[in-house]
Length: 117
Image 1 (cartoon, rainbow, N blue to C red):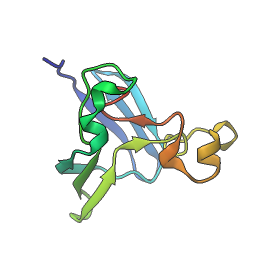
Image 2: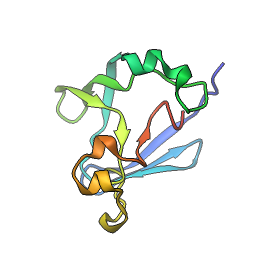
Image 3: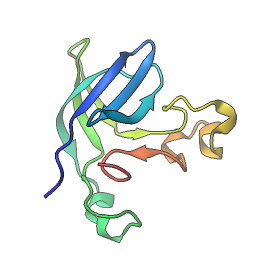
Image 4: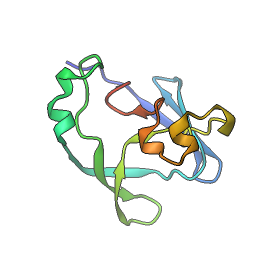
């Protein structure tokens, strides 16, 4: 079975977020992110072939979700990736994809459920 973790988000959409897991630093996100509540999650063909990819198992499948934007109550569709740009890394350190505005292809992106649980 998967381990159980406790997560805390400190910050705001204006200042960015510090995410802690089990009381320890886990991830920083830049400004612009809002808290959401996941409602449903899609599974794509990449998820079905997960065991063939170069990432250790176990993994969480489904990286696109319908969520409720908690500040407004609106429903949104989101992808659960954090590129170098998204994480607030200085622009001069971005990969070529982020510099070209192709953040979904970021060579250093972190995807919840793949590179960390």
